[in-house]
Image 1 (cartoon, rainbow, N blue to C red):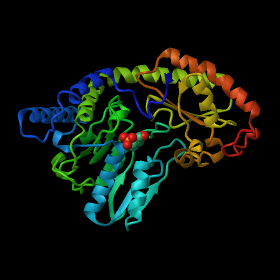
Image 2: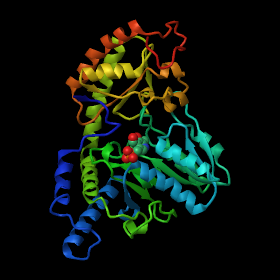
Image 3: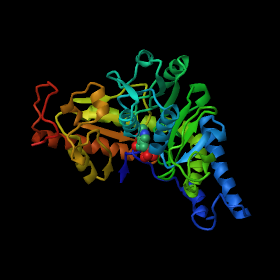
Image 4: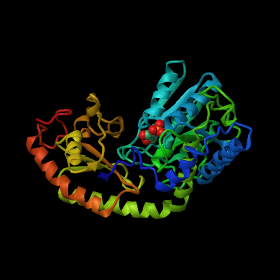
Length: 393
Ligand code: PLP
């Protein structure tokens, strides 16, 4: 398989798997146990915390392990909101559902919210955040990079504006942690969500960084684990995997980003040369090095995905037709892309598994797929960018 869906998940690095294995077999003791074997496991959990803190420029005591990005986003935003009891929340219209749905849930419980928009490149204007802040605002939550189009947000500037008004800043860094450098102190981040499976760690484990002194309520109540903030026996093997993945990322991210960027640029260049009526989504420079989001006009993303799958190529689309909904991606719509053409979106997300041969294969097989689908398509070709949603004839 040619795997080009690294923004959805990544394969566990064999070095990560090796580090995890003993904690699934012989080192099974509960880290809360007082006997030596349990304490050894507890030490390993804290070594993983140190490695992750190192990746973020954080102190180990500011890192809380969770079940992944979704739980971290929930705890960050709900945790601050419930601690304050009432108030106004600012987020963006292109966040992952793990943020948007939390904010909507809080709105139903009396909190108020503003969803700032993005420009046609998918970038938030920090001044819009400034204008949205009121005396009631308690937290601003803006993602570091978008999962669909890869755009990087000016989070340092947004954090600065939030702090000028005494407001906390949270970022969902699920798509950037372990891929590009993050320094929570220098970037002014108060809370940050991350997930291991997006950077070659296992699924079902992540972390929330909370700057020392920031008050938030726990969202998972139970035992004393994670300093009483997140009850439940630790996912020890997962946490060890997350720590190892963080160490590998810290050592290798620079070289890997150069290698993958070259491949991503080759892919985009090859597709642009072989397919007419293409539109690339997201800011050309201010975006993740591994993501190529493209709209192929007059065809439907899902149809292309199925044909690519037949050739052993795994990618994804921005629309939700496969889940039975006719709604195109909320991210592309927020960028002002008309719904009918947003249905023709494809996302290729590259990573450690990507080779030049894989990229060449996509460049070779996609143009004839598009030609074939366009020959059957009911989309009008008058360049109007209007057409039938989710429909090939
Ligand atoms: N936030 C972003 C930006 C994501 O891309 C994802 C995963 O797709 C999540 C949050 C959720 O992370 P997890 O799968 O670890 O719950």
